[in-house]
Length: 220
Image (cartoon, rainbow, N blue to C red):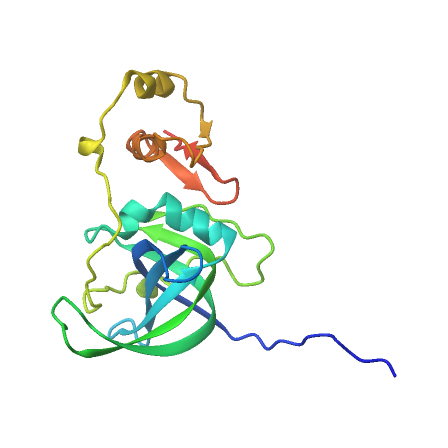
């Protein structure tokens, strides 16, 4: 008798548009550290937008690249990082807030896995993101939907250290590196100057290209 050992799975995928915040690395008591981010998803009328909160583990490689590249903007309360996302395996979760305006209150969030980011806009700038193997539309969302405010979303204190351009010390190595820049630049995350160089590229007008995993000089 032949036994069928094939495993079958049912996928539950949430597709939507929302704002990213609270990018950080989580170190559990058991297991490896992982990249996580909060998503405030928009739904309902653009005139009276409702919000659903997700707290997700970033598992898609392109999504990891995006969150890593723009963690400063994601954790900056003065920036709005809007994305079109795919979240898998959503599960409700409850917890008691330990700080902030809701300290001591029972809060609810939906856990999940961030699979893909297929469109992104930081403040007024639409980024070039290409997902050639994705069947989800990567076209820009309706303008009313894209302009919806996240003022009602619960503000969260960032747990990731951020750097502004003013706080980045420039060594001779950085200055030499800057004079040798081409129109397309790839950074090594193991480089001890990785964050400094990333901030410098942003200041010089470079933009992250998620398809090529590189920084491109913006056209004049």
